[in-house]
Length: 305
Image: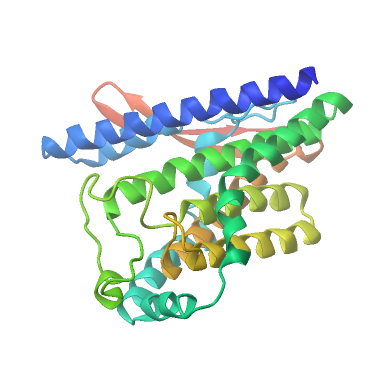
């Protein structure tokens, strides 16, 4: 019971930290844009608000921030970069081709949406339940591997939450509405805070679910977990397109969220897996934004184990 209470307190603290970080980012971006000084160094400084220098050396005592900067940056490299770009391209295509409007009308054609309702709750209940459960189990059994898995789940959730919130803040896409569906499905109101951070593109529920489950599947390298991650993400994504609640999304929102969440989650899971003691024995490279005297730069570290 004591471990459960500690886990709940940990999740609450991390949730408050995430909210403060997101607010700091928004205030930074608003101030920077208002001064018309959006230079590359300013972008790096914005990243620095979320991602401190990552730990280059394998550690036997991981924390939720272990390898934070490196894990985030790796989610924009290689095939993961292709998926991130695919999320943007698929949104442009599905919204302009009328697919979003067609999917919305299909789910509004008189069918029951009771099957989709749980998807709204899974999107924000899975992180504390899964991460908290792993944390309690790890502490109870003194299992370092499970403890690292719980921190991977926490980190992937917080990175994705912050990333998705920034995209919603600047994309300003309105949620589905039964009035003038075709026109509304094409709309984006780019700027700062035009659509808030609750609704819009991409789907936070879908992205967080994909990131959480993908981080664990990547960490454990389990085919069964990968199947579960795919099924869980698909259910939440389709459910958020079908549910008739205030949190409903266009189909392209959920597809983009799934692609982005997978990219981040698989990167975080890989990062924590590689830092386990039994996976050492080779060079480890680390990249992270860092402040300089007049601007910002990138820290590059290498460790030989």
